[in-house]
Length: 249
Image (cartoon, rainbow, N blue to C red; front, top):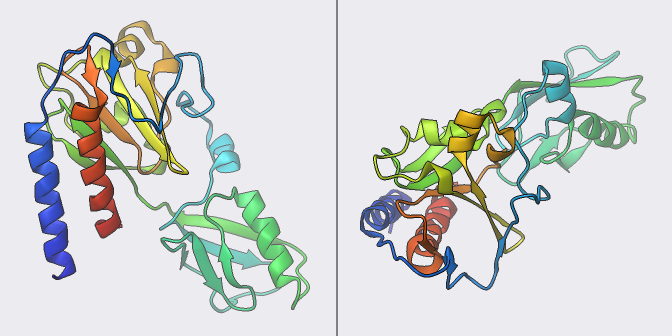
C-alpha cells in the first residue's frame, strides 16, 4: 500500500476517533489511568513549564535547535565556505557537513552547537571564531483533540509554543468545551506525563502558570465534562495520533 494511502487511512481513523469518542462520568477525575501515565501536580513544573515572554536576546540565548531548522555557519577567515550555508537539520536531528561529517545539533543551544562544531572543524582547520545563524525556524506540530472547532494537527511557530496559541489555532473551544480542564499530554522516553491547564484562569485572572510551554508532539485534550475516563476518552486518540505521526513525520 502506498504512503499516500496509508496517510489517508490513518487520517480517516483519527477523524473518526475524534467524532465518536464517548465521555464517561466516573467518580474520580482520572479513572482507569494508564499505568505508564504520570499525573503532574499543579505546583510541579519539572515537565510542563509556564510559557514566558522573553526578549529577543534572551530567546536566542535559550533557543534550542530543532529538526527542519535551517542554519548558516560563518567561520572567520573563510569567506564563501562551501557547504556551510542554508543547512537544514534533518528529522533525526543531524546535519552533514564537510570535514565535520554527521553531527547532531537538534536539542543544542546556539552556543552549545558552536562549541561542538568548533571542536569538529578544529581537527582539520584552525578556527579563530565561528557564528551560527538560524535563517529559518522549522514548524512544530501539536495535536489538539476533543471539544475544539477544528480538531487535529496544528503547526505553531517556535516562539508561539503554548497552550493558548494551540487552542486558538484549532479555532477555539466549542460551546461544550471545558477550558478550565485542558489536559496537556507529553510522551517522553516512553513515559506519558499529564497536567491540567486552567486557561480560563489564565485569561481572566492572568495566572501565567496555567499557560504551559509546549513541545513538538504534545497533545492537548479539551473535554466536555469535568470528569475524564482516560482509557475511553484520551488513550484511543493518542494511539491513533501516534500512528499518524509515524507515517507523516
